[in-house]
Amino acid sequence: LPGIPGRIQAVLGRKLQVILYGPPGTGKTYWAERTARDLASYSIHGRAFDSLSDQERARVTGAPGSMNSTVRMCCFHPAYGYEEFIEGYRPEQAGGEMAFTLRDGIFKDMCRVAEDRPEEPFYLIIDEINRGDLPRIMGELLTVIEKGRRGQSILLPLSASVLRVPPNLFIIGTMNTADRSIALLDTALRRRFGFIELLPDAAVLGNEVVEGIPLGPWLAALNQRICQFLGRDARNLQIGHSFLMDNDRPVSDFARFSRQI
Image (cartoon, rainbow, N blue to C red; front, side):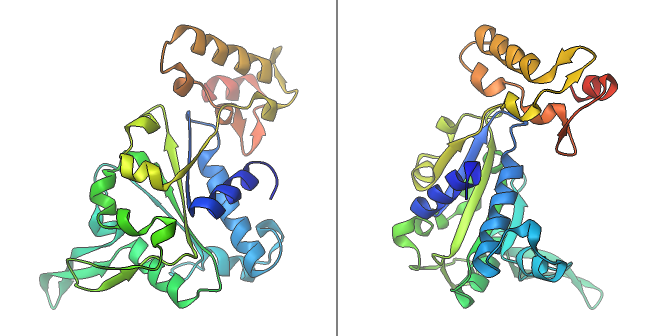
């Protein structure tokens, strides 16, 4: 794959997991989703995701209510925990009474499906990966997500079941560095991921001019001043080009321009 998807593909081939990091509005989630879908599509159907039929796309992203898709997505947040990601007891109503049932989380379920279908690649996108308590969410996974330890068995403490992370399960995380620098990530986790920085790209805005304001040069000048005057963290506080886009195109009128900013 060319461009940013090619860079993501190269890191996934080397590390099996990657984190896209940078200021807000630089397309981290966009590129994570697009790359995962295209990589899965080329592996399964031999062509890009956009060229697939609805039925073929359903095998990649899953039909509504399906849990067998090859590309899935979750979002970490302060309340997200081990119970949602690996396994945990969740309240359920049974026979008019409240009971707690042990349920698999998204990652454990993907490991099971990927192990059953070793010929297919599976991609888990973790949006805002730095907003969660990573050691608590990952638990014993820190040991076995490393490339050299894939396929090794670990015993899960709640269910006493065996979990293996297969080598055909890839992880793509996104991280907004306006919230936290990558230097503040758990050191053990940081060693297991590759990192790709995505910065504002004024060229994406082309030659669009709104009320005499050339969007590309205006954004570049704004970010230059941010880097000049905001000190050490200025690189992470720049304005992403997505703020000046609407439906994947540069804004074309001043009302939208003022709302976006």
